[in-house]
Amino acid sequence: MLYNNIIGTSDTQTEILNSIADIVMGQSPKSDTYNTSALGLPLLNGAADFRGTIAPTKWTSDSKKIVNSGSYIFGVRATIGLTTKVFDTYAIGRGTGSATAIRPYFDEFLYFVLEDLFDFYSKSASGTVYVNLSKKDFESYKFKLPDRDQIKKYHYAAKPIMELVHSKNDEITSLQTLRDILLPKLMSGEFSVSSYTTK
Image (cartoon, rainbow, N blue to C red):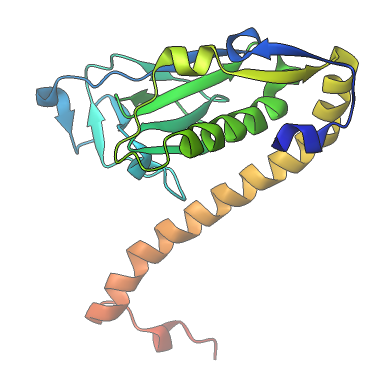
């Protein structure tokens, strides 16, 4: 298990996921509330909306389930996993779930427990065409939890590293957005690279 490689200690106890995290399963809003005019909240309906970067294509004016900044989102239908931390508020549809650490010091450890969870269910479903995880699958997932002192030590050591990863991901997202805006203009001739060459 990944988290066993992170904290090497024999002083552990078996716990289930809902002992360290609140799990929310998404619910799709009515389709007539979808829009592309940024009315309401951006909608993360499934893993395709956060594969690589968070890139919602629809908004909804009638959010059924919401994920707030600081929580993890992941795919729960067909494509499972792709655990991603969000730094804004989103509506989440039926293909998306979220997990929020019940204590700040569980946050980084939670990420790796989720990664192991998806690895476990992916292997268990080998040969299955369609994987569909329920809330019970998450809440009842068992793992080894180190003692609180070990968890806190890991939290303080891992937090700056994870924050750096998240900040780089945000930077990548911004650059990709800029690329998507500028490339069509360059291709159409609206912009010319030579126009911006320093003389």
